[in-house]
Length: 214
Ligand code: 13P
Image (cartoon, rainbow, N blue to C red; front, side, top):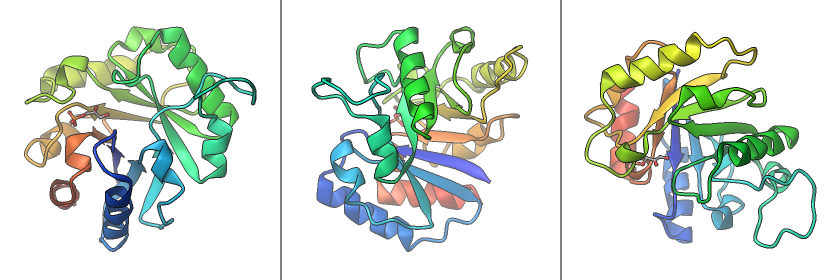
């Protein structure tokens, strides 16, 4: 199975996201394990389906409820049906490695699996277990081309050879993945899937990517 995580960012209106999830639910996904990350406002409105799992695009560092205006609790995300949460995405500022780590711990404590975005394998020590790593180089997010294949392969092999006692459950690559390059990217040894931005928010390109991965 190849994991495809769709970060819908703020690309889709509420009604468009609901509709896209309905279309996905009618689709044959074959060898693809699909995860969708709608906006906070839309997660609850997405009709549950056995075709995909749900996640959120971020969560607070706080493990307990309290006076944190505007924050979103990982416990609430779990309660409304999320299984995953993306943490440390470059578009969510501010970001320090400690803050990302704390978001990951809050997610795990709530029973979610954090998908931790990173550019540097060295900053990934001390993450909670289980977790997923997404290699997302900032210069390739929303860009024309993905990172060079050798560099993605280097990152994956570096992670696999780290002496961490809690290795990631899966490793993904994100940044300008399209239907043209997805096949080559997932052929990288040790890579379990991709994290899509634009291509995962558009029905035609998402379905083409799913087809390519069969
Ligand atoms: P693009 O696929 O649009 O480059 O975005 C990647 C991304 O940020 C996924 O989280």
